[in-house]
Length: 196
Image (cartoon, rainbow, N blue to C red; front, side):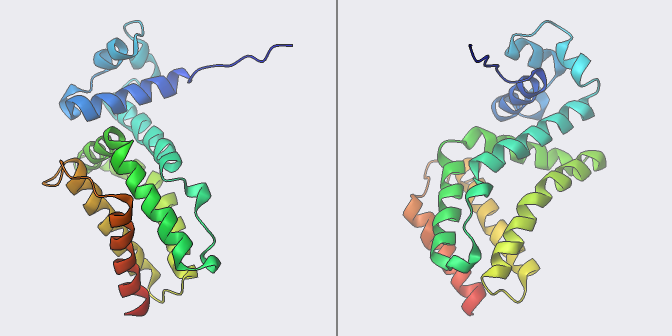
């Protein structure tokens, strides 16, 4: 008996191609026709799946969240009861992975985040998909003993987003920090929050 393997679904193919186009060409380069061409699909395929630009952007946002969950390895985050060290290791590895092997995905996220500032419907989708990351991080910092977990979560996300933006699209684009450097920065931040 043979096991049948399948590739990505049509929706995943379209969304992955949209994310790649966003990273490569920016928001202006993302069109239904461009997705069809880049994905090797017959003309009109993307439009059949996501009729409007808004639908295409939401498809990309949902796929982005799924792919980032794998990059950040949310399922591998340690129990906060294990202490700060395992969490530092896991968070540093997740951020470093996004900076090194998944720069295009990170760049696509910033394109979508900026577009969401101009499209309330996209903002709602973007925020809803991001909630799982925020909620898990809030649970982790609470488990480490934070008495102001919402504020500390915001600080941690702002630090990580700032680092990733600076290294992917900003003034440090040519200088990706090492895993040890990312971990040292996280240690300084967590020590300040939890012991300050």
